[in-house]
Image (cartoon, rainbow, N blue to C red; front, side, top):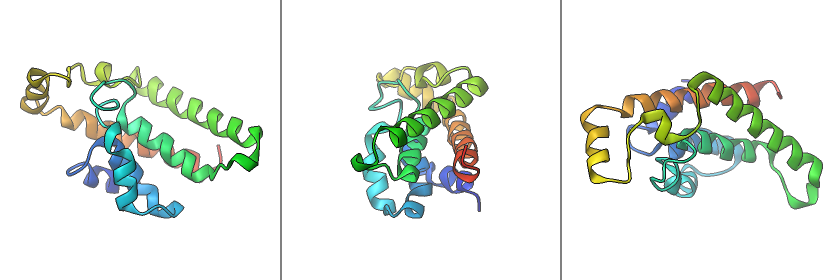
Amino acid sequence: MSKADIAVEYFKTYNCAQSVLAAYSEDYGLSKDIALSIASGFGAGIGRLQETCGAVSGAIKVLGLAGQFKESDGREKLNLLCEKIRCFTDEFSDKMGTIKCLDLINCDLSTEEGRKHFKDNNLKVKCQDYVRLSCEILDTYLGDGK
């Protein structure tokens, strides 16, 4: 089963950010439970603010884990991580038009009416696609050292 498939399966229970981070966490020495806790507030564009898509923020956390950045590593390693993040977000945005949650689902999740619209119109399917895409792009960065 691919990481994208695992993340989509997690997305049946958890938010988008949790799903992406949890799918990869144990590969980098982070337990699934801790990953779920760390990413719990990042769904719906960070606490329903609908800023950066949770699937994107989950992937950024994975890139950080994969880079194993430590303060003693110096600026060069941090600069490489930041470049990977920029490339990842650019690629996601090129495919979807944005990384902003509100623009991706066109529904205000900060209101009860918006959450009802999200549920009634099964917009979770769109988010599932963003979870899958984030993992697919992420795999290219983790697999070939982009």
